[in-house]
Length: 134
Image (cartoon, rainbow, N blue to C red; front, side, top):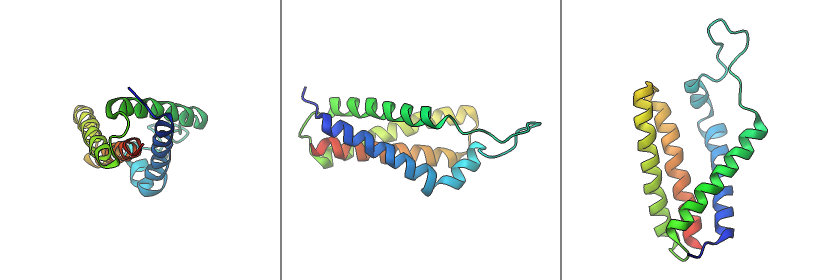
């Protein structure tokens, strides 16, 4: 199967920057509040810590490259951006629903599920559109 490495790279970078926008600008405050970032733990002297930035950035980029490769493998080349968008969005919905099951068992807030699930729908749709366009 033909896979466009350029498309995979662009899709992974798009996911990387969409994650930055989604979690630091668009939904920063509600997301941070819902995950307890910046709150003092029971009896703790310091606030909840952000993960190591280098590990966070490198790890997320590696995972996004893997996701883009899997999506490209499924779509193939020349699928068309609209087909890629649709398949990516549907895949994002599946991922969001899988998160939903975990969130129900873990008792996490519905609003947090909307933020994280919505991110996956948007990011997979964008990656699919990019990959499909090549």
